[in-house]
Image (cartoon, rainbow, N blue to C red):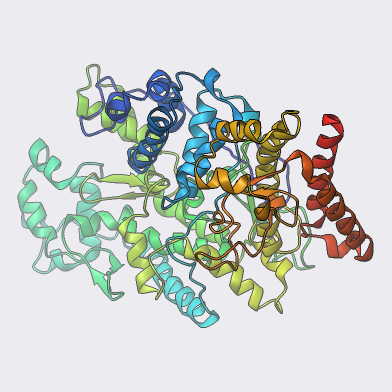
Length: 627
């Protein structure tokens, strides 16, 4: 696996290539799966979407069924937008060549009254990119992401309680592994016909003997072993195991449980999902890395650790390493996709720290991984595999190198990577509840950041460093502000382009301006407002919606009230500058430059002042060009 040089917390979009050729299924996907035909069946009347359906399908809808399901309603909104253009505006969009900036940005106004407009806008922009729309015609999403609920901030006591519970559950599994190692080789065959005595079935070492030497560990379920009829006296053996104590585990309510029967014996060697859950949650708390990145971790130290290049203390016992993770969600699309993109420092000593956790999980899953490799070899030797065998082989090939693999009672084997793009499995949620935490695993992200902030003397830089963000800025809050400023700047580029077309038109008659504004998507009251000099703002632009500012520009404005903040220069989609506003922009530019001279360099860090000056200068340059 190629590794990319970098510093702690460098982010980029990486996807590790498969290590071996993965055999493709010979049979088509089940009927319950989504197909291109099913997804686009309800938009076949929209020529634009229907023409590019294959491109859109390949770029947006081929991730997973769960992803496709969430994106179908957004496709319907985009289809409604093109229908609206056709019916209400008489504009028929047949291909990407028919688009211009006025048309592409009109979606922002179309989607404004809808819920979750940020997600719907982002999907629309993805469609534009998928069909090859020219970059200069693709607007920036002006709408902030809407949270279903505010992020939960855990206090220090809750964090300590959760970590204590998790360490207790991890210790149980660690001690269980040591107990198994002591019991292996000490048992005997408890069956009466093989010299077994009364009470032998109640001894755990004898259950381990039966599991390994009589039945044999495999990736077959109880039903499959019974159906194969390859084990003499199978039902009698299973009846005896029902009396034999199996491996201890933590129940849903947090109490200790011991399961008799075959599953209890298999648990000695193959971890179940509830066995690995505390290790995963503890890693999330210790690292601040999201669940999907941890779930995708590959087995082998070379894949999840590398040497830490700095000396931390003089003691040779105090060793540290970088823990490596691949972050996909929210990563930089310009990254070169080589190697891990998150590095987290971990001590190699405490058993509850990430390095020792992963080291133990490697040991815990080794027997199950060996069975997987054995099953892969067996299936590859089958000349004419049926559909079930082929599907089994494909899944084994896909997950065999994952770190967090586990046994199940139904499918026999699985991996956390199967849940990386969906909701976490029940075992993770049940573990969170036992620890007194909410079941939304994303809350664990804020847990570490806020905990480090509180216990570092309110040092925001420490929180920023531990959050593994890419930028070297000293505050997590500055990051958010900077992202907002950049979003407004990009949006202003689009609005600016539309205003420049008005300034450069040299058609200064009232009717000519109305025609151009109608072409940019303004009709009715918004158009009348733009033509009304009473709705000119402090930045010199006219406003289309003075009593209904768009989302993101409506701070401190009550419903039905005239816009208070008037941050039009930051890219408000309702703003348009006309040819006669130059004097106002010149005054604002002079005032901003004067303010810049009076404040220090550090005061400008994270401020919108420099970008506002730049935008005024862009407008003034446009007037010079028009002149």
